[in-house]
Image (tube, rainbow, N blue to C red; front, side):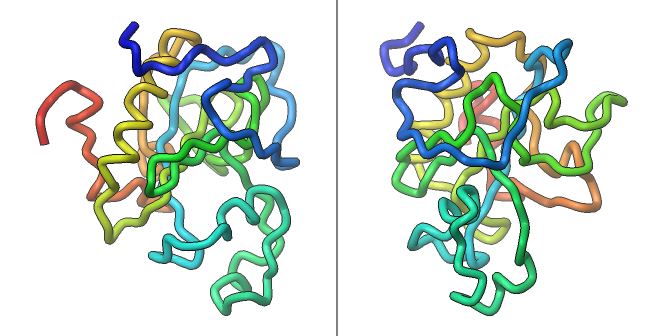
Length: 184
């Protein structure tokens, strides 16, 4: 394992290298659900705005719905992800890996519905209109290695792959070739 690879999650599913901010937007996985999929997302609140803590507030049910006009369109949304990687590369964990985070919504992968049951969700602070930062990739790549070493991961996909027509993230600026060891 490369030295930059963070230690595996503890028995509860928390990654020691991540800042822990527990979200209530999770529940138990089905008893027979192995973690086989990693879903990459992109999020910014409001869209294309990367300052502030609105995503953190959304994932912890503390978002002030009146703080920005856009928030009215998502009012009452209860959503989370296991991990969130900020533009500066900082890593936050909202849900332990052993629990089901509410990140994928209506979804399907290889004919299996309800991807939240068997996936880990990683949100990158970003959008369809902006490239991700080097710092984000520097955090994401070792995180993926740690998760692949810890769980029987079969694939890493985008939200758009499991919810086509409904979702577009992580968007056209995500460097998929990096996941396959290719240069940009």
